[in-house]
Length: 358
Image (cartoon, rainbow, N blue to C red; front, side, top):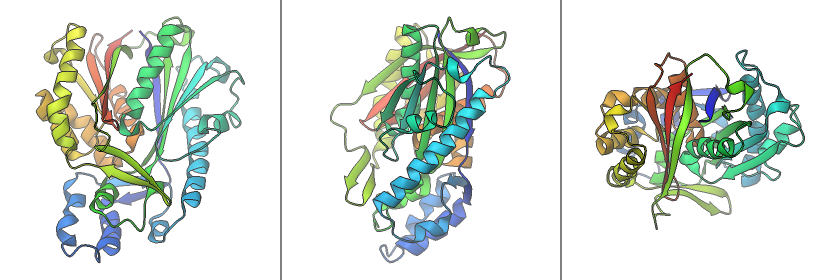
């Protein structure tokens, strides 16, 4: 089983309270909605207290071109991504050099870059020029869990490998100043910027040898809901990326997710009560409640996800890394089982079965 050897995160430079972003939204949207005070309750009821952004709030008060926003995405993604990788590679518990990294999976859905961001980072950090690059774009909130799954596949095929999974999401840089829709208002209350990186090691990697109890990936499952393209994603227009965010997402989760989880557990000969840790991507307060309703789990099993949501908002694919990092910072018993779950455009789900062991 490939081992998750390390997870690190980096917060972008500008921290804003939810009250600050609500006041920004009030000023921007008040002429578009006569019931603006009622709609602003989405900021108060979402259980988010703070978020991090690449740019200060004053920057968002003016219309920006797609090119300006995307140029900032490339600059921030390259530099913050490199900083996060350095944080992983400096972990004193690892016997690891940049030359030992066989592949980099780069996950993002909030900006465009060709050459992709990991190539730009390889010109900053001393990776081997032969390091394989696997950029993955467009999986949205599911992208982080999908990145772990694809790293699992790679390490199963090449058990001596060491793989980095880097997620950079700068959702704020997709903000559309002229879009006065309810979808944009909801997105303004929820999404944020985040950067995270994980090191995954195959069974035969020297770094995988450890006396510590660590999470290992036992199995993964990807599922696509047919003909559900309008549930979540982007509309690409002349001025950039416009959020598609259906109000039906919680209902879709309640009716569709449980059979997927049941199938996943059945094929691993497990029952729900054997899963001790639920490493859920916190898409929002209603999404977490839908997980609880669909899976029949105690609300307490989403406590870590709720903490991340409260302190950071929804950082798209990067968020599940933040949740996993919190789980890894507290001691787990050998043999503990966990499920990592995330949902994204498609509409799709990504599930991973994780076991803590030496």
